[in-house]
Length: 118
Image (cartoon, rainbow, N blue to C red; front, side, top):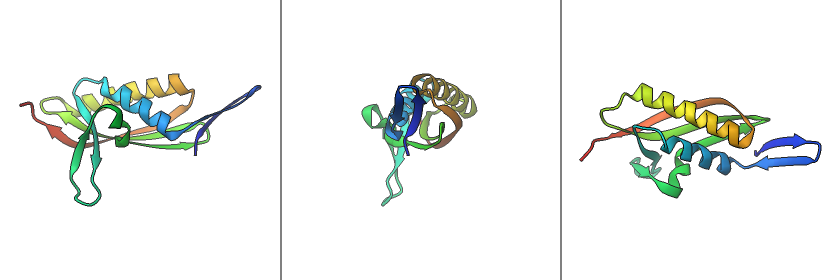
């Protein structure tokens, strides 16, 4: 289902993929985040997604005028996971609400892995 914003001149339909791209780009700006993650269904191996494929690590559910977002991320080793997750949540909520006009009801962060610096 797409998000709907109605006004006196008509309706604006916002697709889930648009919200996923906004959330992915906002999250990638956070310190301590290496990238988004995607789990291969056949092998169960988690792969790092960067750039335009980052939205594949985001699951979006839209109901009425609220959005629920689930992010699958890989964190940099040595950073405090709870602080990085809080920063991601704050930034994603701000960007999605300001750019779409939809209310974010919930954001879940799933840490799929930790990358050690080479």
